[in-house]
Image (cartoon, rainbow, N blue to C red; front, side):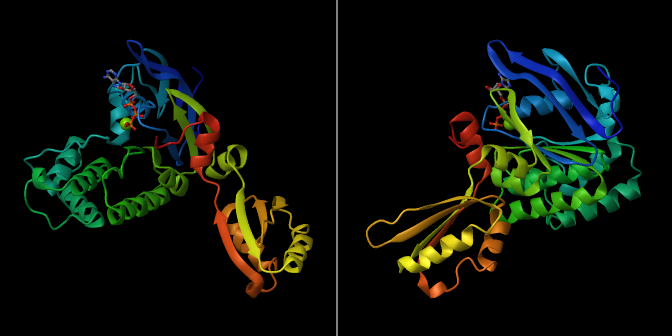
Amino acid sequence: MSMTNNSVIIEIKDLKKHFKEVKAVDGVSLKIKKGELFSILGPNGAGKTTLVRMLTTVLTPTSGDARVNGHSILKGKKEIVKAIGVCPQNITIYEVLRAEENVEFVAGMHGIPRKEAKDKAKKLLEDFGIAGRKDWSKHFSGGMQRRLNLAMALVFDPQILFLDEPTAGLDPQARRLVWDFIRDLKNREITIILMTHDMVEADSLSERIAIIDNGKIIAQGTPTELKEKYGSDNVLEVSFIEQEDLDLVKVNIEKIPFVANWKEVSRKERKTLLISFQGGLKNLVKLLQQGLIENIDEVENMKFRQNSLEDVFLNLTGRRLRD
Ligand SMILES: Nc1ncnc2c1ncn2[C@@H]1O[C@H](COP(=O)(O)OP(=O)(O)OP(=O)(O)O)[C@@H](O)[C@H]1O
Ligand SMILES: [Mg+2]
């Protein structure tokens, strides 16, 4: 394997893990850059957790190799473990310890002095909204345990953070809390590898995404690149009361560069225009601001369908992400 480039912090080369006939990970190659938030998006059973477990040296690959922070996962376990924080899919906490004791324990294992560990634990638990709990962590709800697990993964300021389904089982409010926290981490130069089957999560947090299916990476790019390449266009559907108003809009459309195409589908009374365009919500706003529709009173109905990663996955595999 080549020397790790300065800006590449994880380099995966043809990594495989087969469990008998199950090809959980089947020849994954990827480069993840220092400081980026990289998501691996795929359905249940795609191989995400198996991939994380190899990268975090918990599981030995069947073949292939990866360099994590400059060390091979085959030979550099000790060095790798020092540099990474892991929040596993299955919550891993010490059940008969309190929240802060769990966090302080992990800090201790990483050689952080007691006083500093205490302060850090307190701060993190406050950030995650679980500072008030003083009982054993086995009595916490699933969502609280997950947040505690995140705090444990972060207390020693790891250079690389692996998050395997960090918002699974969280209510919408806690989910947003975790998302905000992940966004904040981006300002700290930490590299984050996020495993998820949640396309909204991947879309809103990631700088780059690799889509995994049946143990193979089937596409990668920024969320926008993926949607432009494999998605469907965003569609604005506008129905007019009068034909002449529709005709006016047709003239206006021609002048808008990001409109890919349009189609008139006037049925019965409804005179409807389907406008396909690139660029998502931003361009929807532009479209409307650029005087596409001069008089909103002439509009009978308007609908907007947004190109999403769901479309991308569907176009690539013929299946939905959540089948
Ligand atoms: N220890 C194991 N022994 C046998 N098969 C395994 C083992 N671990 C994983 N697998 C199989 O490998 C495949 C990939 O599993 P993995 O847990 O990596 O998927 P995943 O993408 O994380 O799925 P999920 O979204 O459900 O967490 C599955 O078919 C799974 O049953
Ligand atoms: Mg998993």
